[in-house]
Length: 213
Image 1 (tube, helix red, strand yellow):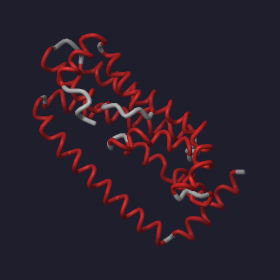
Image 2: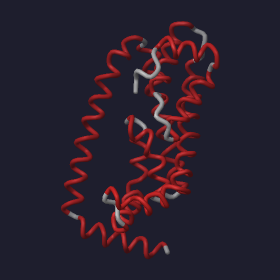
Image 3: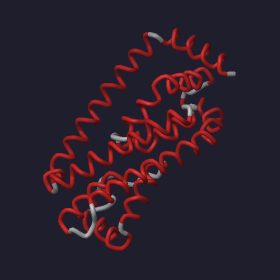
């Protein structure tokens, strides 16, 4: 993903379209299009530091706005079309009616954390909003966690790249690797927890969904 746009291409886009380039690339990635939004943000921050042609505050604002807007598009697309797609084709990948009910329950309980922390992982950054919509995470909760995650992410990577400049490029790879490893461990632990408590979780899911009808 990080090789789709190199530093020269990013500089060209920024020179031609300015902050709109940051906003659009980040928004499209957040809506579900596999574009390198984080690479664009880091590249724009470095470009701002080295050239002085852009203000880092506006770079961060453009990235945060793109993240929030794009995630909201992905959320409502998932809410409008994701459920029907999962109901129609989910059984092909082992997602029958019971698993779909469980997914809605899990997002109802922990969907906010998934949306917030998903902003920091490449794959979840593309999918989390659509999954939140498809699993009916309440819109208000989604907006709060999405906005908070988008702002924190933009500040961490934008200001981090700006003040550390080239040094940030050297540590970004190890940071991404560490985060991916942490995600893999977390998913494994969640899977073990699920297998050990599957029956209870299904009862809780059915009880929650019956109360909401």
